[in-house]
Amino acid sequence: MKKNHLDDACTTILVGKNASIDGSTMIARNDDTFLAVSPHSFVMNPEVKGEEGRTVKSWLNKFEAPIPANGHKWPAVPNVDYKKHGYYDESGINGVNVAMSATESTYGNERALAYDPLEIDGMDEDTIVRMVLPYVDSAKDAVQRTGDLIKEYGSPAGNSVLFSDKDDVWYMEIVTGHHWVAQRIPDDSYAIAANRVSIQQVDFDDSEQFMWSDDIQEFVEKYHLNTDQTGWNFRHIFGTDNMKDRHYNTSRVWYGQRYFNPEIIQDPEDGELPFIMKTDKKITVEDIEYVLGSHYNETQYDPLGTGSDEDKYRYRPIGLNRTQNSHILQIRNDVPKEYAAIMWFCFGYPTFTPFVPFYTNMDETHESYRDTDLKFNFKDAYWMFNSLAVLVESHHKEFIQDDIDWLTDLKQEFRTFIAKTDEEAATKSPDEMSAFLTTKNNELTEEVQNKVHDFFGQLYTKGITLSKLTFNMDKNL
Image (cartoon, rainbow, N blue to C red; front, side, top):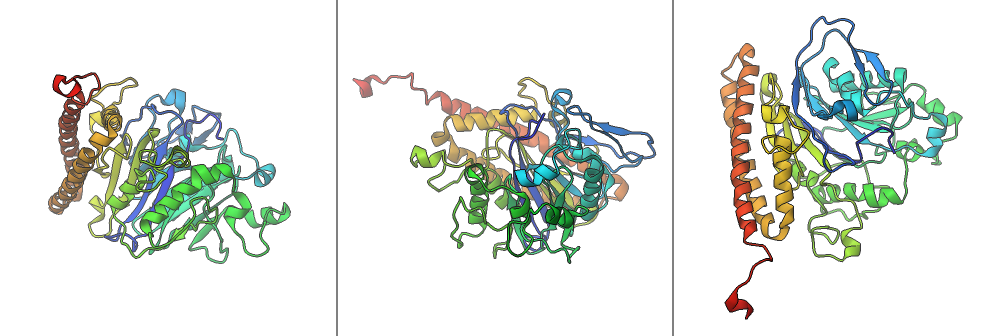
């Protein structure tokens, strides 16, 4: 388990550009924490030029490191009470359309950790995004910078990190104090990860598809860590395969692959589920939203379903009340780069609340996302969407179809919004673009806020009629 850390367990989806419906690259993740209530904000960090002598310092350990004088602008989703819980910026797309999401908690085995233990004051999830994202110009560059920082400072936890640009998607697994492997997701493939080492066979002759820490092969050979007779399987060498994996981790990968490849019959407790997958289906944003909000829907393992208690609570679902935010970072290839990057962002349970699209070439975020209070305040997006989720789940049987229909309508409206905004953006100059996109983001934010208020009122009013504290003379006598 991670030390000094609020992050618990997340679920990751990565999609290559030829596997998506429109040629976009997409990386996505649920940010899950130990606590059901952990207020976050959604903020925009400005571009920095010529500011020498800056450093990043962790609030959770003794890590402190210098950062470059120049940096791209970048959005982030930090803890509100960062001095107590650490920054945990989580996700964003920088000013040159490089996306990063960090981290997927990942656990190395005791054999590997014995010879390369975690560095308690190394660079952990709380600072990793602000150490990397503003200073990279491609996804591969981001892997290399992260690897260089881990080499210098070490890692105090197992962390897996997602990177993408318009062409490439990379998944990096840091599992001991200094050793890691990264794999490029093939253009025609997708991958799902859920808190255990996912990368399998590594080809050290193919540096276009794999990257790795210095001397990792020598390290494995010296300490006799390869358990296989042949091959070099990173999951087998560095990962775990235990009861927690089977009930907490592997089943989530199984369900995601079941959704994208329903023709394949697999075991939810199979520790050898493949990492890289192909499907005949062109993957959409809506597909990813469904999986990230899922809870073994339409199976006997659904905790909101009708199965036996033994089945309903056998596996940890993907969407949780502890999901503080969920995001899909999309870099499109069919529009100019100035408005190609969209961050589909969801506060609250992704099962019941919408993924709102934000153009990331913006100057700032709306105050309802930016200025989150530590205590409940319905004006804040964090609290508003979580309140809606609690209300829907409180009368799940009676409210769920209303919620599904409402979300479906919003998805259609979001698609229309993007199409119209793209069309108008095509008439703007580069100098006008960020201000224009900021205005459009804010207009949509306020429109969605009004729709949430109206929908909340409808459900609240309906909920009053569902009270068990009622009596009908004709019916009850």
